[in-house]
Image 1 (tube, rainbow, N blue to C red):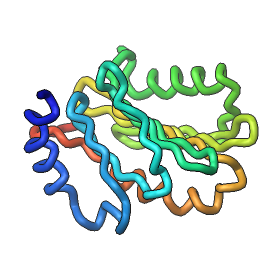
Image 2 (cartoon, helix red, strand yellow; image 1 turned 120 degrees about the vertical axis):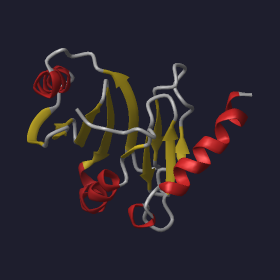
Image 3 (spheres, rainbow, N blue to C red; image 1 turned 30 degrees about the horizontal axis):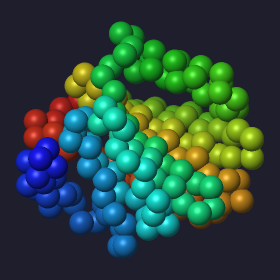
Image 4 (cartoon, helix red, strand yellow; image 1 turned 60 degrees about the horizontal axis):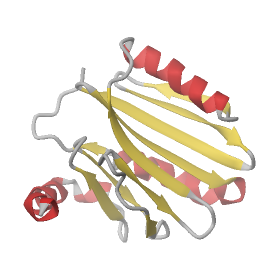
Length: 166
């Protein structure tokens, strides 16, 4: 019943996405709970179910690449600076060697390597929530994903009708 009630809203959101931001052949995932969307390429064809609490989803390909997307309410009182520090610590504690970091006014990126895989973590804060995608892929697929990461980032949108960044 819930899906039927939200279907018109989801279709309206998808219809408002700029056509240029969704590459040809890619699909769009919309998360109504945290009001964000992201497009993803067709080779990430194995979709996991929505998480039980509705915060996100995982997409996997046959080569061992996975895209995880999720939202969460702002768990850090220190804002973006604290979020970067906490996520750096989380990734490092999980065995990831951070090799790249960037940030903007309301977003940040952490990237690194772990056990033969490359991890690209992008998060942004909008109002009282963070929305994040993490792409993990084998080093052997680096040339394929290097060109797709900017496309993923370009189609990672806030979908709330009254969007504003803090």
